Image 1 (cartoon, rainbow, N blue to C red):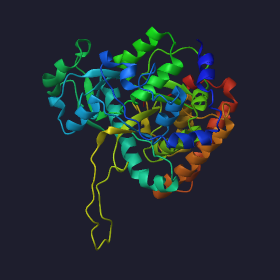
Image 2 (cartoon, rainbow, N blue to C red):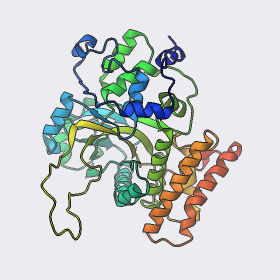
Image 3 (tube, rainbow, N blue to C red):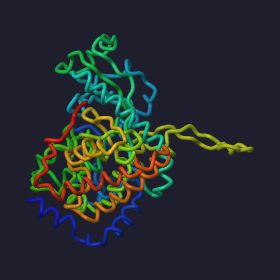
Image 4 (cartoon, rainbow, N blue to C red):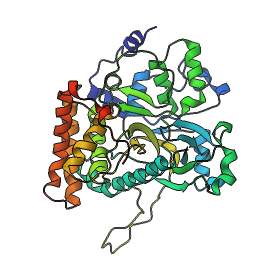
Length: 437
């Protein structure tokens, strides 16, 4: 069966508007997600018929709409989540062997089992060090701007960035204790750092992606569901390109969700564009980083009472302390979906000048994978993105009390991008990309 045919089947009795679909999706109660070993993947045992992991009343498309919508919360009773809850404070040296969960341009990413951390390891010490420093620079910039922009964009979620720690050089004593925990093929000395792991999307989401976008042969679908690598599923948000060929996919790692796929599922593309714009504004004007080759993905985070990483405080000038209340720590059995930005090993620091707008920010935008909206692909979405980017940029620069000329740079950036796209026949971003300084 072709993907077109399956699309027609999945949307039977599903002709409601996007707003109605979102309302219906919000009515779903958090669904328990049971992750079992391969031998326990039995549809009848879970009451899910031929679609393990999917509630019996949902189509795969409805599951994706529910679980990929930003801020949606999914409950999971997986054994992995329980182990992570018990091991929150466990040290790096006390963990089990590391497993590969991703490959980057400058290093390989390993899961540190039963913790909320991952480890990136690579041979290029300089690139790893840049990634470590600029990722933390962006993380801090988001933390510094979060309250300001959350108030300015009520109802939106400020995207997240991992925090990095524990940078290890090739001569570090760390390797004496931990090198044997890596797979046999990855035991060469190098640089490494620990960072907050972006938790994978829940099993329900993975099942729905496989059902919709993989070959529908049952043995292929079953193999995909049982593939350990597919558990490490993040979705790349490609708002700047439609899918060229509707071919079947064979991996959930860094799964590309193009604009037409986002529209078909019914996800709120405007919300994604606005949140991406907010993140880019922070990266440009607070962190002062060009975001060359950085990624925007949908991933999970362990749910807490608040998204803000700040201590619980009674408030300034409070004369009477609030009554005792329950304060939850991180709970890995409750997962919420967020936009994350990551990978800064190819990025550069910038100065707030017209020269760096033209020579760094514009090439980085146009030379990246198609994450950002474009005026030639979806004019309305580009307008939504531009408006949010400009508003967020102005707020960040005002908070920094920048000079009047600097306040003109965000609009200049958007204008230059639009001009370059309009004149794209003579524009080759590859010739202008600056990967290093």
